[in-house]
Length: 534
Image 1 (cartoon, rainbow, N blue to C red):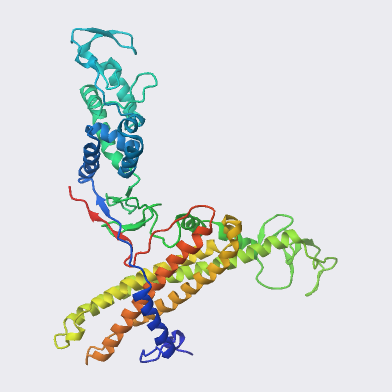
Image 2: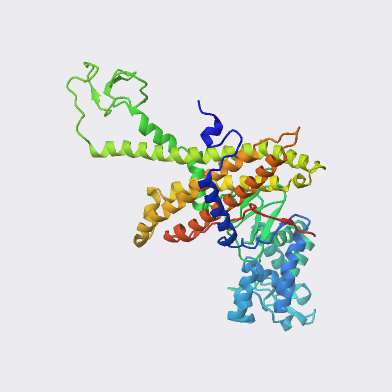
């Protein structure tokens, strides 16, 4: 029986590069140095906690207040209207001007002279139609005024319904009520509602902000992640260690788009493949309709209800038969509908099994390399740092760096099979531009070639990192050779990962009718969020 080394193409002494391999990998190293573009700048992302939430919100409020010279509650209303997109506010300011932009957001700046009326002056409330002195009447910046009792009950009902922005009671008035007035009136009669209103305003920074998402950790770590700029198709890692896709809040899944990943999760966790297996491997009794599984014997099957049937076609028959035929029954003629249904189920099941097996195998390998190989690599790196008499060996950082590239590449490889399952399957043929369908096959060849090369070199890198060092005596030449091999392979797998991403982004996704995007490739994994300091 062949050894593991022989199966993977290794010699017993790990000198597994022949001349073709060396030439190929030298070319690939050149590719890394010359053709690979510099990686994109990491996404600026911050982790916000309950303690730092107010400070983070105030940062955006101050920016808008200074830009437009407006008060804080005006800036908050404007930011909530634009879902806290400061870039969007700047764009609207340039195109529409300050006054029109504020008016569309329900922000009114002009002051009303009724606010300065004598406290003894009497006015009618247009809600309860009672007459009140101005001392118990509140006027909003839009000019509408009502008695404090009506305002208070209106504010209480709005807060109870979960509203963060409360509009004026005036007929068809779009103006946002001054939050200071809301807070003052509620605080006098309904202090709990006033506290909830303040909490709503604070949490609006999380709930209504397209650039802030809760960390999906379970149990929840209490953090939300904010990304800077306009980058929403990215993958981030919370300080608690959970990495996730910022666009859909699912676990990190690039280079597979969110829509495909969501379908895959449903497919793997649902009953669709169970149904396919039943269609492909069972028959229903034509009398009682119970499902039958055949494990051997001839093609005449007898159900528990007593009904005989032909296993080939599922049709009802008599009991008289031989091993090769059933009396008065023939099913050799092709019936298009039922036969096609079963054949399609078998083909879909076989195709799904092909991609799922490879997805799971690489996923399982990632777990082993993370949970078992990771600590072993860390121990070896620490051991190298203790070698005082071997100056060339004391730097063990190459081990951890190569291990990190291995883990990232393994995940890319696993998820690439999910992308291939959908992109090159029948379900997505109708989602490709008719004029571009011929390009899919060519791009598929390129994608699968990159995938094959990545798979081969990932296994080689895993083999190199799994090699134990000789402690006594220290084999300096062997360790230096392993170091060079690991660093070369780490560069190669990083290059192939980048090629897969580039092929998906530039060659395949543009062929789809719907606009689909994926996170940019990060050689070191999801961008790490930094703690936002209060």
